[in-house]
Image 1 (spheres, rainbow, N blue to C red):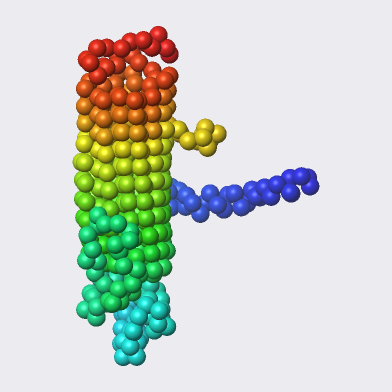
Image 2 (image 1 turned 180 degrees about the vertical axis):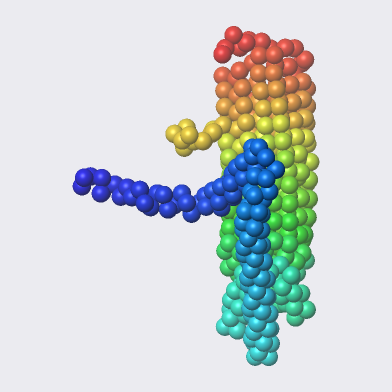
Length: 415
């Protein structure tokens, strides 16, 4: 008995109460439908018009009474919901008005630089109000700040070196270094926004337009960025680990040195995106379409690139091999390039050891000095590929088209 107490097993009453709380509506509706069904069935089973008339005189008032009670409850619920929405709207209006008044006073006091106490107070007020307001009022705040030149727009092109970007600017941006963890910022007006080093981890930015935005060194880990627009945005050294990025729009986006561990790009379209030196380990690129991506020196170990299109990709020095740590975990450690389109890709000095390249199209690819040891090349097309100096020790061949057009079946007996 003492052992059972230590296990903290819930009582039968608690279990029944929990089940009732979870299934109350379903049980009540089902009971109501069954009762009505029984009444209808019983009515038609009566064998004389007199009995049916007598049943109607009893049942009809009961049904009308139950229906009236139900309609009254639903009407009351609708009124309560409307009242709650009105109260919420009133609270938002008051919060928005208070914010504007406080910001007006801070602006009168003067905000000289991002090191001022007034700047930090203004930033805290902005972060707090954006968490509380609806999408419409959030955008009113953004337009208000924009009109006061407190949301500096990023005028830098995305494909630039880290050293070329200034750490301080003469214009002030309330979003540089701001903390908006888990904030709901869907559809917020953020075109060209400068949010350098901001913390937006776990934030919801679904369907937001971040064109020309600067999120250099920002934290966007675990954020929801589905259908987000990253046209010419600067995401250099950003933390996008474990983010939802499917159906996002990527064009000339700078992700140099970014952390994209386990990021989900499934089915994404990525045009002229710079992934140089980025961490893409265990990222999901299944079915993604790359157009001239720069993946030079990127870490793609354990990435899922099945059926991805990587035409004219620069993978020089990229790492696509299994990592030692993954050998001791349940996660897939090898890079999966099954049926990947790597026509004329630059894979010079790329580490593809143990990579899965089954049925991948590598025709015309540059594989000079690439490490293909123990790579699975069954069904791969290497027609016209440059394998000069490549390490092919332990590679697996079956129905593999070699650079000269011959078919290599040396390992077809392997299971």
